[in-house]
Every structure is written in structure tokens, then in C-alpha cells.
Image (tube, rainbow, N blue to C red; front, side, top):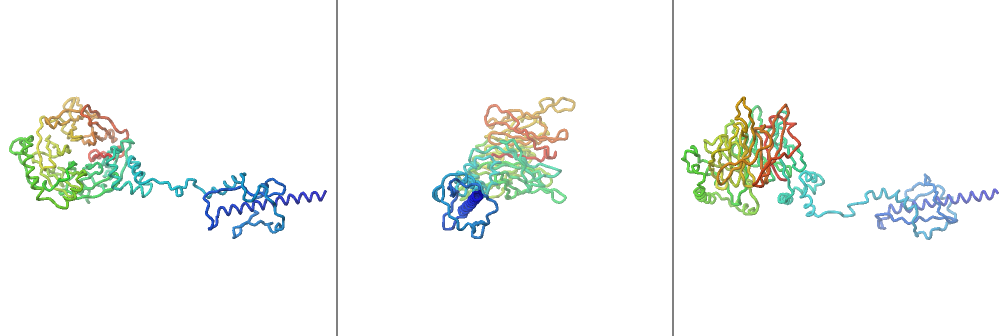
Length: 562
């Protein structure tokens, strides 16, 4: 009996030894697979075959101890503490066929989970799959993004940033149909000083965005004008210089797409709150001939009939013949060969000029002078002055190549940008208005509009029931008469309400303080069709709750389609 018990213990011990050797062999094979030799090609993935299990009487010995019995040496092999005692034992024959024969068993899954997790951390390795998009297809995808999403896309990588700020990409986006209107509110005041911030309203997301503009910090009473539907010019204004306010003539340009600022040539005269307008001109336009008309003054009124220009504004044929001759002579004498060659190269592209008229001088005196800026030459040129009795300019807009200006004493004049002269426009009667509210001129799709406030009940006398309403009028350019188009839905609480037009839409922002709170309302009117027009509110979010009440007087508005 004792010999049978010893024989049983001996067989169990041999089985345990076989299991340890089995695990050691498997570990060595896995180590070789994980660290392949330099001569053999590297395997990107695991292809485990069945482990060679050795046993004496058949069956897989899977109960081996995988504890701390194995110590790795410098050669990469693993040796057991009992390997020297079993060197002379008879080798066991494999029970699953040859050593390279493989069948599926649970060892495959076990060692796959254990060792593959640290080798292949990302199963979709883009460096090996070589997944990419060509630049032209990537441009077509990015050009369709809204402006907010496009700004976020520029933060992805340098390639996307350089791609979306290239001239080719900006041209594709400007010519495409994927742009939406954005309202840019300038001149806001916070905590008693000019905040140097621009509030941009995204009409798609119905959300106001804040843009930091340190270059405008401390600057106020300036005017803004959108040019080419991708840039905004900030012209003139005042700035606190030591203990006094200084009126300056600097001009800066803001590009919302690239979020960049640049300075251009300064005006000839320092002015604050000038009346601005932008007009498209032909490739042969030259601002040199405008300089010859600047000294011609008209001291008498157009009603007196002394001036041959203002006596009859409808004598267009006589003025056209006279100015065509002068225009041809001036172009020959003031042509610049280099500028003309460059303009011929850009003859197929649109070209715009900026005009600034009126405003206040360094001593708050109303200015009757005007200037025109050509971005191609980066120069300002003086234009013909306004008549002495015209009064201070309150608003202006460009319509069909004519820069219309309205004065505080209800006079209307137009400046022909191509030919370079002023012409008086006799309209009688003008729409009635409240004296404290100056009319605002806007133009869209070749139509000239004016927004003015008038009494609909009472006449403004104390003790009577008075009710004012803001109406929009359209000027018939053929019969020279005003006709009422629509009525604004909001009460005219803001005497400095701002209105701009773009692509058949007229946008307006009114801001006023009531019950200790500053409120603002944004409205839009569709004038793309000559039929009925109606106003509607475009935003339920407000931006005025964090601004000072002086923002009502300092604000200015511009619209771009981005």
C-alpha cells in the first residue's frame, strides 16, 4: 500500500512539473511574438495557434500555477527554480499533433485579452489606414459651414486654419450661396467708458456674440460702413487725449471672417460722426477729377435760381454733356500708368469706393466738406463741398451710383460719384416728422427709403393726447415724390435708432432706457418685393442689459453676409 501511495504522489508531482514546463514554453513563445527579431518581419496583429500541450496519458494540463515561480533573465528567457532537477526527464510527446499544429482553445482568448490590449490600443490607427481628404474636397466641405462653425474649425489644426484664411477660400465663400446675415453693433459703452467691444448677432442661431476689439477701446463718435460685403470700415471719431478729447482722422478696417484689423490711409480732415457710403465703380474710375470741383462753391440757395446746377435738377442732359468733356480731359491729365495697368488686370472684379461727408470738426462745428477713398490707390481725395445753406448732414446712403444726403433742415441732395458733382433734388412736400427725430436714409435693390417719426395723434403739445409712430417712405426717382410704404411696429422710444440694408432686407436696432433698465429691439423688413412690406422682430435675446445708457447715442450698426 505504501508503494502504491508513493507511486501516486510521484505521478502527481510529474504532472505538476509538466504543467510548469508547459506554461514556461507558452510564455517564451508569447515573448518572441511580442518582441520579434530584427531579421524577421514584424507582425502587426496576433495570430495565435493552439498551445502545444504535453501530457502522459492524454488531456490538457491547464491547472498550472502562474504565480511568482518564473524569473526573467537578461537573455529574455524564463527559467524555473526546478528546471535543473528535471533536466534528465524523458520528454513528453505532444497530444495535439505536431508542435506547429494549431487548434482553437481557450488559451487563445485568454492570452489575446492579456497581451493585445497594450499592443493595439487604438484599433482604428489612422497612420496605418492612411485616411485623408484631398484639399479641394475639404474646401468644399468647409466653405459650406456657418461662420461660427468655421471659426471653430480653424482651431482644429494649422492646415485647416491656413486653408480657411487663404484668398482662394475667401473668394469661394464670398461667391457662394452659403452666407447668412450678421449684424455688428459698434460704439457700446460700459462702466462709463467705451468698452472696445463689438456685439455680433448671428441670425441663424439667434445669438449675440462678443468680439474683443482693443483697437477701439476709448474711441467713440465714429461711423462704420460695410464695403464689399466682407469688411467694415471704422472712420473718424474721438478719443480721450490726456484731459481733452481729440478728434482724429484715422481709418481702420475690420474683417470678421479672419478676425483681423488693419489700418489704411487717414482722411484729409479730422471729423467725428461722418456720414458714410460705399459704391461700386467701374474699372476705369479715377478719383483725380474729383479734386477739381472742390473749390467751386454755391453761396446762394437753389430756390433763388442763380446757380445753373441747382436751378433745375432735372436738366440732366446739359450736365451730362458738360461733365463728359471735363471727365475725359481730367482722366488724360491725371492718369497714372501703373495704376491704370493694375486696374485693367482687375477689370473683371468688382471695385468699391468709400465716401465720407459732413460730421463734426475739432470744435464741434458742422463740416460741409467731403472726401472719397479709393482702396486700390489707398488715397483720400477731396470732393466738391456742399452749399452753405444746405445745413448739417444728418444721414446719407448710396443708391444707383448717387450718394444721397439729408440735412437737418429737410433738404435732399445727391452726389454723382462717377462724374463728381452735387445736384439738388427738389421735392415738395417732404414727409412730416417730429423735429427731435432726424430721418434715416436706407437703400436696397435700387430703391431709396426714409424712416421718420411723425405724430399720428395730436401735434406734440403739452396737455394733449399725443402718439408718435415711425413710418417708412419710398422716394419715386421718376416723379420725385415720397409715398408711405409701412409702419414700424415699435413705439419710437429711441431718437438715434440705426437702420441698415442688405440684400433686400432692412435691419434696425432701437435701444432705450426705461424703469432703470436698458432695452434693445432688433427688427427686419423685407423689401425685396415691390409689393407689401411688413416688419418683424428677429431676436428674442437682448444685448443692452449689460451696457450703459450712453450706448443709445454712441451706437452704430453694420450688416454683412458671412
